[in-house]
Image (tube, rainbow, N blue to C red; front, side, top):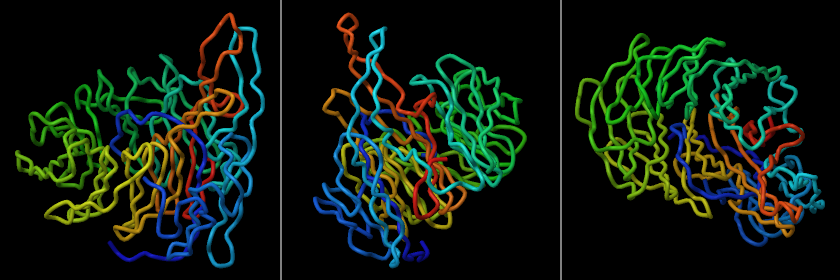
Length: 443
C-alpha cells in the first residue's frame, strides 16, 4: 500500500453499550488501540503518533471519567494546535425508571452512539430517524456521489427506501416481495437488494423494483462497476454483465460468507477459513487456506495482489498475490470482523462494536469502540452494534448502527423485561453515522 501517513486527529469514541456477538456477517462487511495512543487505566489522550489519535480505553481521560451509567456526552474537545484530539467521554448519571399502566418501563439512558449535533454532512438537516421501534431492521448503507441510501423494514410491513442526497432524508415505499439481507448498488444507477428467498437479486429504480434472473437466495453480492456484478448462489458463482446473470463456476461443498471482485475475477470467503479465487474462463477456483478455521466474514481489495480478509475470530489477513499473512489480531469481547470497505488504499473494518482504519497495512487507527455488554445499576442492559459500512472516500464514510435497551417491568402483575428503542422520541433502534476523516457525527 502506498504511504499515506499524515498527522490528523480522530475523535475516538469509547462509549457504553452491549450485546452478544452472534449473527451473520454481511458481504461488505476492529479493536481499540492504535498508533496514536495507548489503552489502559490512564489513556489520557494517548501518546502523539503519526496519526495524532488520542486513544481512550481506560478509567480516566483528558475529557473526564467514564462512569458506565449512561447520561449525556460531555467533555467533547476539538482539535488542539498540534493536531491531537481531546477525548469524548460519557459522564452523566441515570434518571429513574418510569412506570406505565401496562407494566412496561421507560428509561432515560442516553443512546451510546453519538446522537447530538456534530459535523453536518453537506447541507443535510435532521438525522436519519425512521419509525419502527425495536422491530425495525435496516439494510445498508450504500453510497455513491448521488448520496446515501438505506432500506428498512418493520416486522412484516413493506420495506421503505430512505435516501439523502445532501439536503435531508426522504422516504419512498418499495414493493420488494421479500426482505433482503443486503443492499448495494451500481454507481449512479440502480440499487441492488440481495439475499431474498424468492428473488435473490432485485434492482431498485426509484419506487420500481425488478426481479433479476439470479435465482433465489443469492448471497453475498458485490458490484464492480456500472455494468458488472457478482453474486453467490448455493454452490455457484454468478456474474452479471449488464444484461443477464450467468454461472461462472461451481464449488460444491463450500458455503460463502463474503465476496469481493474485479471485472474479470472474484474472491469468495467461506465458512471454514478458506478463500476461493475465481478467474473468468476457469471453471475451477484456486483454494487458499491459512486464515484459521472459522468463517472468512469480510473481504476487500485494492488490486489482485492487495486484498484483505477478516475472520470471525478477529484476524485481519493480507493477500500479496501468492499467499495470506495475518496483519491484525483484534481483541475484546466481540472481536469478530463483520465488514470491510476501502478507498485510496485506506481500509476500514468493523466488528460488532468498533470501527477501525488500517493504513499502510499495519497502522491501526481506532475510530469507534463500543464495549459489547453494559449492565446498569438499575437492572437495565443496553445493546448496540454496528451493522453496516460503506463510503465514497476515506473522508466520507457511512456507518449504520442499531441499539436498544432491555428494561425490567416495574408492575408486579406483569413481571419480566421488555425491549425498548434507545433512539430519541419516535426514532427506532436504527441509526446512521458518518466519519469525515477526523470525527464521527450523526447523519
